[in-house]
Image 1 (tube, rainbow, N blue to C red):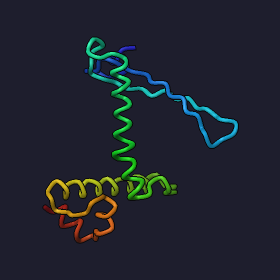
Image 2 (image 1 turned 60 degrees about the vertical axis):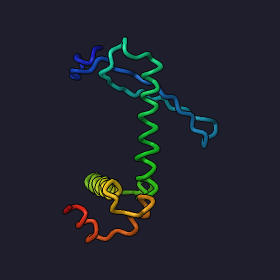
Image 3 (image 1 turned 60 degrees about the horizontal axis):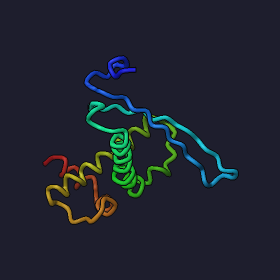
Image 4 (image 1 turned 90 degrees about the vertical axis):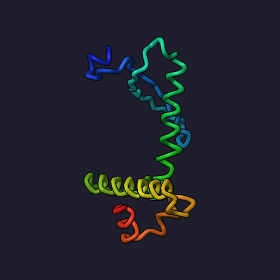
Length: 134
């Protein structure tokens, strides 16, 4: 199947990545398999399967180490038990806003906090509002 056939014009390749996960905490060891699909604008002759595999691994490493870790460590996102979909979306939006304000403050050299968690602990509505108005 081509990218155009699935409505993704401008993409040159569709990748299917098979992941097998072994759950170590269960006995006997259970496995689960999932297929992840990715698209790229790289032509087949521009990249080898190994290159594409590395791009996928790098993508997930950046998400896990960059975003997910910060969201879970600072906001305890994995421990939330919000049942309402709208409430969960609202909390995620507020977390994104806080991360954005922190990064903006760091870029502008307006914070001395050494981590997102420390920065969040110092914030009040008034201080966040002031940063939004700049």
